View 1 (tube, rainbow, N blue to C red):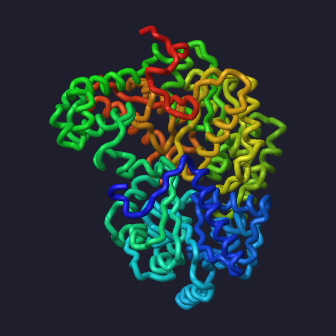
View 2: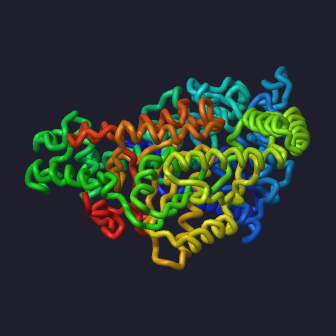
View 3: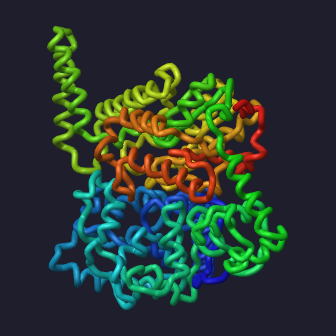
Length: 630
């Protein structure tokens, strides 16, 4: 596998990774039971292993998987941290695993974040001793952070480190900000098992999913061992396997540039990737690439296949040109259903194309899959209530006293609430209405209105907290009912899987499952990407150019989401506002085409059209859905 220094398994999606790891744990538990002894598991927290724990719970309930002889040790915990708080890893593990399987409480070990500071050193030594008394860890499950940490072993961690108290890296605290409703609420320290403790496990399985993990995965798997990236120490362990979905594997050499590893089978997709890579590497437009350029960069076999650089360059150039679809080449007269995971993803991701589709006379409906109510600051609720109350009183309306009483109840709820606590039901409803009102205002900026909006309020999101319930049949039924009612010919959905809390992934899964059971002719599925990432020009099927004026109008639609303006409650790893990310991404897509030697557009949105779950070549997009007028 070329430069990979750790065995890597790439699986079809996040669910497949979860099933594989859960199956491996189950096999170990059963094997140890057959041998008359218990299995010792090292467990991780965060969004990455959630699917693993859900599958283990299912195995326990439906297959009788017995955990009574299992001993567990968790990697880490924030400090200080009350075990009862929703952000604690103790709460996480109880909620997602231990409350649903039969591991005896005496065999569960999670670092305590409420140990008096003067006792922490002694406590950490005792944690290490407990692992040794249990016979050592048989299988350690790991995630990986953007800083390359495993556990909370931040940059600078020693290969010989053991369980200890340490300061959290700023990147780690920024990534945890949404869980604590603000980076200022994230603890500065954590207790973590050390690198040496992790490497003492007999087997290790590291899991990574999503585009946002791709670069650090490559560093961990292919880079040199260095304390600045603790995950690189895993290269020293003979029993490590890394499990990835395609998105997390995207930057590995065998995926990103497989031609540098030797001969391979050339597909049209790989040929385009290679030409674009070479153009970037040589800083030349596509049509300026020479045969020598190909030979000098491990691509002699490819250029030999085409005889010379000219035909290969022309083919790549024409493929890209065919992807560009201005307003006149976008769908007309179709029934279009746009699924938006949160109430602003539609205008953030496809605000330019959305306006063009409306202007082309399509019947467009936008379905907001979740309420997005947890992403509203308390001050927004106070502001709306103050306006409503003062309006009623100023106009002498009878409702004035009612609104005043409501405002007092809401304020009392806020006074009791700690950062990250679930809002009172009344407050959840008010925040939901704020997001819906903003969504309608943004739609009006694209030429649509409230009659064109549907608020699905999918059940999995209704927890009132950052942690969501598993996707259920009820969620899929909500989406299916809308598909059957509207019977669209084209469906747009979010294909951006880097959303920090997995909401986009779950929303896409619901759409895909609903489309599988749809009774009508299968609609085209167009995937956009949201606030976190954009399709590359190679991945995209359709590129929609935007003028400076059109991009500005799109940004103004995003501004209608006032509760997300200036400081978004869930910004993710990028500190910029959503409109700033959009402006940069759309401009960069157009600039990329310009550097490749194509027409210099001001900005561009990118979309991927799928058929049977696979990207459709631009040339094969059915003309029934695309106007051929110019």
